[in-house]
Amino acid sequence: MSTYIKLDGSLGLKSFREQLSKFIDNNGRPIDDEFTIDVCELKFVYPAGLVAVTNILNFLRKKRCHLVLGRPSTPSYSIEYLDDCGFFDHFFKKRLYPSRETRRRVTTMPLKVLKYAEYNSWLEGIVHPWISGCLGFDIQRRWPTFSTVLGEIFNNINDHAGEGGDIASSIMQHFPKKNEVHIAISDFGESIPSKVREVLPEIESDGAAILKAVEEHFSTRSSPRNRGAGLDTIIQNTVKHNKGNAYIISGHGQVHFGPECPDGSPASHPIRYPGTMICLVLRTDTINQAEVHEEDFSW
Image 1 (tube, helix red, strand yellow):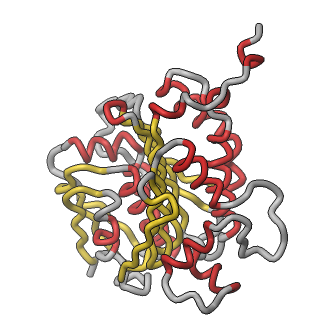
Image 2: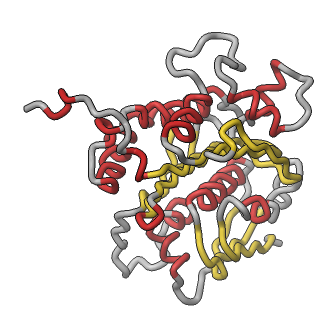
């Protein structure tokens, strides 16, 4: 018999672990081998929530669990959003409302599941044009370290690729009224705390392990990385330069970095997140403070 799962309420950073607990136990193991998923009562879906659910469903697939969709009887804003983002098409190979043209949500970059080897073409061919269109200027000229920030996220995925391989899920959304761009990227490889404890087994909490991983020059790798300075580069550019917020979720730990907590505010949760999720909330009204070189505008 299939386990019936109802995803309800608001799906975001504050609620995703409770939603995931319907699929997995506190040790991150599936509670069944077949799930029927009901999304009828979802009220609002944030990028972090969508990526977390996508990550857990991909994880369940890897565990050979069978996923069944409980078809909604009537469309709602959240269901149409999931449909337009490609959620149903990715997992169930069909749109819920194929007769309805896909809405061109200019403020949303649809759900993307990709491998590390696909990262560069995805960044240059899709991400740069989309975010430049949202902001009204060339992101590579105005804020060239944006590519470095995303590159470090994918380097982290590649460094910690384990059971999940190097597959990552991503979605991005622009909230013009809030002057924010939300970027959520997740994988289900080996967690950051697990890798940190290979070097420092005495670290007790997963939150403390994430804080250690973010320290400049700290590495869990036995050989030097070819480029980048690691997770601290993400924090430096997102929080200290952009005045935005960054959330790193891995295992039982979650650390928030923001203007009021630039050194990180850790928390622990009983529900273990399979893999790692990094969610960035960028301030669009401070991006234009980055230096623009005059030669960028030469003819």
